[in-house]
Length: 115
Image (cartoon, rainbow, N blue to C red):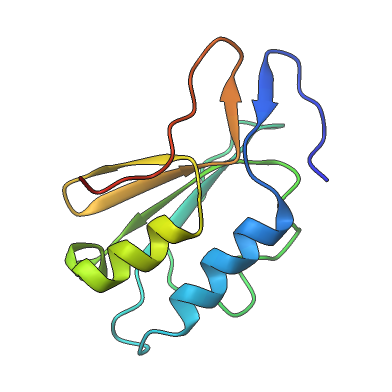
């Protein structure tokens, strides 16, 4: 369960993050997107990396404000469809996607769409 942070509300849970991870791991190693994340507690933004087996879930997801993905797989219609089916809140822009774990109170969290 996500922790409470003043001024934010949770829009993702452990199950959804693990569904994202499983989807990415179903791709070939060369097709997997890079990712980086922001910790809501510290504001720290990680560096870009591609290690989805351990680094993506290292430390859990309770403090994960957002995760950004970049890579050529994001232009693939089948991957877009499968990613959208998870039901994550986020936004797609070009060859990148930001998936939200928390959103500022008063801000609308739209489901990720590639339309």
